[in-house]
Length: 305
Image (cartoon, rainbow, N blue to C red):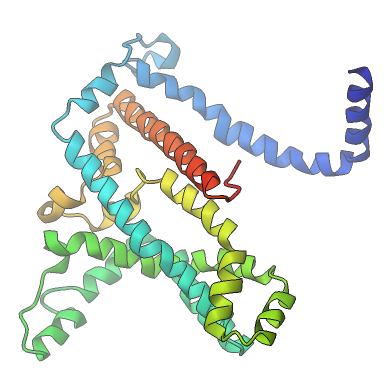
């Protein structure tokens, strides 16, 4: 035991340079991530700004019960879940497909231009994106509806249509984030041993067969990790995106947990209720990450732990 501790100390002394580099990161997480977590206790209190966190009276699970018994609970959960699942089903494979296509582009300049153009929307805020979408989809002057009119079709108020609102959320998410997400897969592809492709070419494999038999298996672990993280965020359907695009006409299909918390928790100063709902989301997310990680490990991958 003593020799083990001594060895550990000697190892730490040898690696003190590397350990020193961890300090800024540890301080950041301690101050900005773990420190504020003590505020989660107000989910179990009737928090008042005047009395503060510790002097506010305890109320048990009152705010959780209030949210679960709310008539809005199931519609909110359904909308949040459906929007997130649609984004995973239709958006998650797009980034992989884009990365696979970019990886096959031999012209480096063309590849760089396409990669840059596809990643730029990630840096545009949802406020600007919502403005662009509103202008593009306007039923009176938007180019999309002008094209429909030229084709002899009736104009559609897309952003006011309950039928179109969720597909628009998914399509705009794909437009904004696919190029940025593809960078991670491209980085994973850059680490693939070129000899694997050479061996595949010697065996007569086409570009498509190399993609299926070499590239995809080699980035399988990256796909698994990103999928686990995506599933863990299933109750985060995109507050900024929905908040900037939602309107009373589509409230029944677009209102999600985060927008409800903003209206009822923050605007009406019900901070305990807002904290209770977000704590509920965190617990669900943790359970989903653990479950999806277990399923991934059962399928033969390493998972995230």
